[in-house]
Image (cartoon, rainbow, N blue to C red; front, side, top):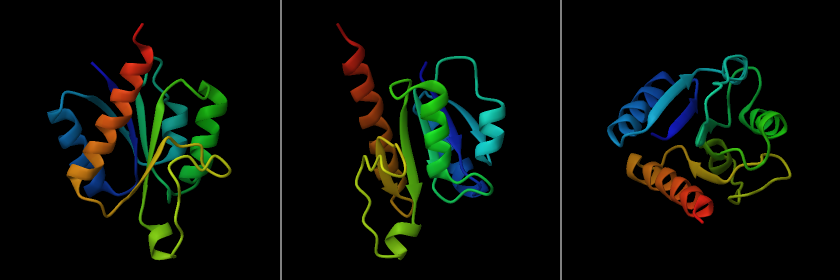
Length: 132
């Protein structure tokens, strides 16, 4: 079973994503802050991290940098969610490693179907990369 670490301070979105991901057969571990996730980073393999950009304390970009430093660039995929850049008129590319080493960026206002499509795409890419 694939494991997903979900970090978001929005309780409603966190619960909705947990239900959707669990329904698809993923094992989901949730946290409301980057600090909590880093303190309790599961010892078992993680396939995907989904994080919000705007988190209390350590923001999502710094969280991504800390994860990559602690676990390595290829340990797992990272999907970042946020509506802030769109509201500010900023376009973020999928792998803007200059500030947030993510594998994919999705506007937080996207539909659940769009978010789930990004999850499936990232995990499928991971499966293809690990095949002989």
